[in-house]
Length: 365
Image 1 (cartoon, rainbow, N blue to C red):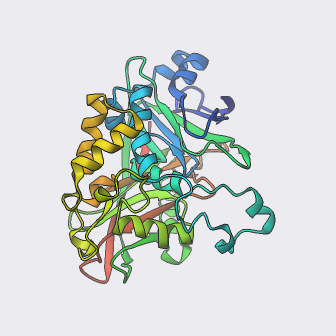
Image 2 (image 1 turned 135 degrees about the vertical axis):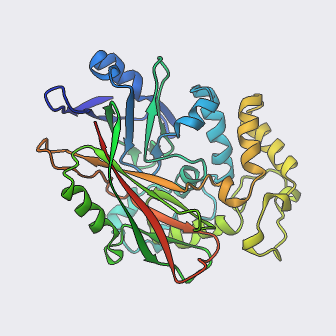
Image 3 (image 1 turned 120 degrees about the vertical axis):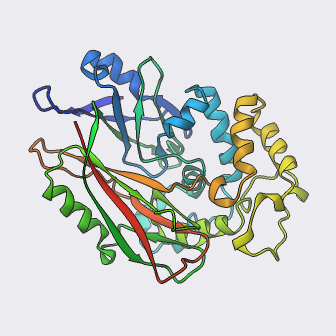
């Protein structure tokens, strides 16, 4: 890992460091917290909390609660990830990977563009996050989880930012109403300028002069059959591959027993549930294939496979978007990666013609 920059407000504000990472393999785990503890010692560890940010859509962080269940152990996390990598194997029939259909790519770009729909789907399915907070007092690692680090075009150069802070103050909140998709199964790009959401968020951060902080965007309780994620909103990935997974989550799965994967086609999407599959058979074959027979990982994955699609894909009810003062002038902006978009996913149509989002703005102190 290479330190890109470090910026603090004369030791009074949050600690801020950005690092570049060169993965060693396609799937890799890198202990970012360990690197910062080694590099900065008490300058970093004196803060009880840290907000970890990935600029990427196939590499990120586990939620602290899930990492704790997996004991922050790299072997347990690798076993957990392997289940989703088997469910979304490389070289399956993904539309995202049919590069001749990707009209946004030039011929030169097609020559080096990775075929990585599997990594995008595994990122969303396993519950990886582009930004999440950890509160740790011991020497536990915080793993940067890479799902597409090495491909035919070469080795990626990744970027991650960490803000260490004492606490956070809520400075504003609002509700935003957006037009609902007319399709029962769909994904909406919340970064689309036509929706106006991002303009409202940026205006709110400027109004309250938040240099380091986060937006929490969440779905109210009454908004059902929907979830939020941050990923690349590429048309074929979102309108074909993700939609296919929402209809039939085992569609792309590696060969784990023909009978176990035959879902009754007559079952409508709104009642899709893993009770319709021979869950025990699917689960055991997956565990056998990845070699993950440890009871801890079995329990985590078994709970996922036994639940409806919304829980299986670990669709979140809330996401965080970072606010970063990258220039050191006290003015924060949303810390986007180039291809990142907040995405509203629904597997059943909204009750009305709109959906509501709750927005809270927090300042790190």
